[in-house]
Length: 262
Image 1 (tube, one colour):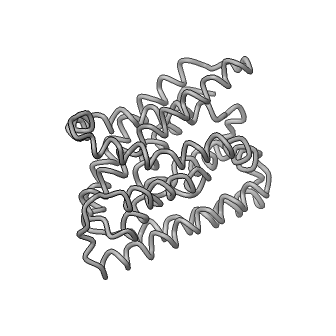
Image 2 (cartoon, rainbow, N blue to C red; image 1 turned 120 degrees about the vertical axis):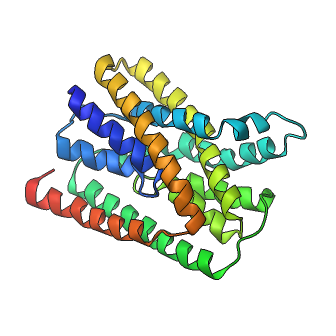
Image 3 (tube, one colour; image 1 turned 90 degrees about the horizontal axis):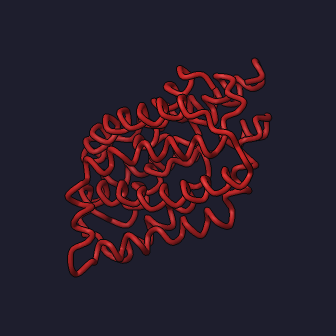
């Protein structure tokens, strides 16, 4: 992988992780288009680690509050993280095999999941504008968002978009919805990094360090920009343009594979 390719992928990861458009889906698509044949799950997960840096910066106070008595939010975060952890352990390899093959079937699957995210964002905006969404973060809301995050392990299903949509459906107020959705990314991404790192060492995969560093740094910078922008979007509950964008990407996923073989 060339350094410029790593920078492009890092930028895609940074923006797509926190905008509701699916970072994993975009990474798969961009690796196809850029001809990065050696792109693998470990590189993708390391880019996710890069996006955790701005989460710690932006939500530093909220993260510190997790360790203060009575540890209520910490408990809710643990509960919300369990479904995704179980799904990742049980189905992670199956999902990777289905979407990272690079054939027409994986392109169609990606188009379907992009479209699903587009639909859920459309209805999330409608419901958010119709309902008051004033409830505080409780067990019910954390369970809704935790199950949603476990479903979003599938590339093309935006983690942030699916989790935020679940928060909207549970009646959670927009401020708590935004902060908790971003906090939920921490244990899941760290867990995925540990598992992927272990697999990398076990299988003897050789990682090109220079492109990896450039990719991670780029993901961190663009991730910070995306978080700041997404916090404003959630407050306004305006998701429709993301829906339109995802439908376009769904079409491109199939068209580029059929027309150009990428």
